[in-house]
Image 1: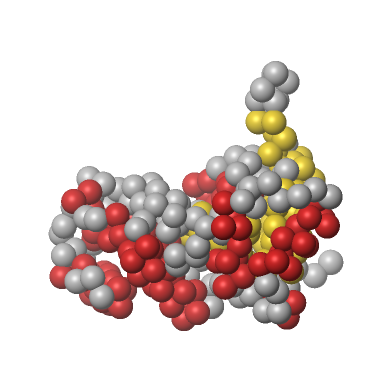
Image 2: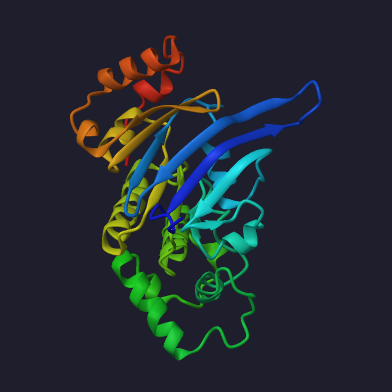
Length: 274
């Protein structure tokens, strides 16, 4: 059998929390998904639909109870999050998660440049690397290229998240995971971070999974759309069909697939600030 051309393959993924207790919850139920190179997938669903759990299983944060995870044709199902990091760049919702508060900008970026390798700062920072860090930071337009020795914990949330996006993409990962990465920012800062994200995805032709809690954003960005509900992918819309859809069309698709009304009005009524 030839090597798969898909960047990501999920086969029958089931994830259960608190298994065997009264608090048992099946967060993902028999989820299968194929992601091709350069697909930019937006994932929509209400709270508890399984969106973040899906990204955590892909990233190796949680092992699945059943199923298989392949990245670039490699079976990574049993690889730790650390060992899987060579394939993946990830930006979390909280800007504090993706950066080390007590490290400088250049120290953070040096660690990111060693993703998937044994990490040590010894020899990781030199003038050649500083030059490359400046080149990566200059397009942000935030002046951070001249502040490489600044401690990241002293920066604003928007600056930290901009650095987190840069760090997540600087090694050109096979897969970029974005978990509502502008949700905790004010609208103006969120737009700045998102413009940066869009620029990098387009420039590097990154294969991307982006969680959003907003239907307008899910339609506006990306070239494929997934809707999740109760641990399953219930709607999968390709590029050609996605560009024709309205929010009303998306609500109807959800209700037909789920067999129930859309109860979480926040994903329908909130504005896309990105």
